[in-house]
Image (cartoon, rainbow, N blue to C red; front, side, top):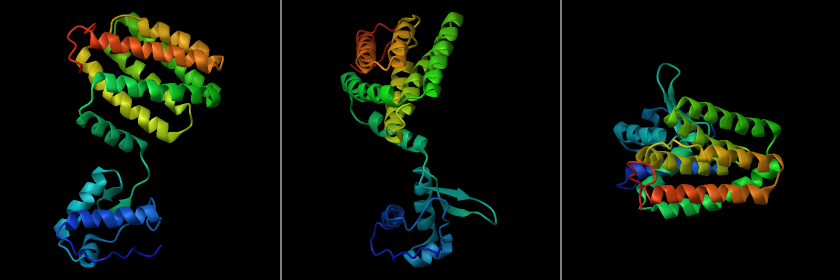
Length: 243
């Protein structure tokens, strides 16, 4: 590929202009994953700004997951490959920084997870079903061992596995963002020491195996509403969840 050519920065917000031009080239396809950006010196000349300004812009692009910075003779700034994890974390941070209530979160989960369950019933493979089965089995073993904290983590991962079964990366990113918020609430509330979720998971797996979307959705919605009530009423000892 030929080196991208950037326009000189004419604004006092040089930092934002640099990032904006690079983002625009990514959207247009002029820059693609794996492409190497010009050196800091070349970028500073093209943008007509200091190298420090270029360096800070590149650092922000790296934090956002759009580029990777490598050191050494073969190093430089490279357009990163898409990383759903970075996108999910960014969305999760945005959700947590917004003034949301527990009711807002549960309502969003009911909508999103109901859709995910229906799509998964249509598209999931035997491998997906096995992964879900293994997850529930692992949670059962941790419950028997009294390892409530690790069991809670496994329970949350079940939702991410279910989203992956849809084959839609956007749904997976959205679900991972929501489950990260749920994880934070779970930490504040404290782990549950009962097997209510395990029993619900067993019923849900049965519906999924039969591709019974209506029953699977009903089970998921019942579980999410019950969990909401437990958090809302402080059924978990030491709960500090939002009301």
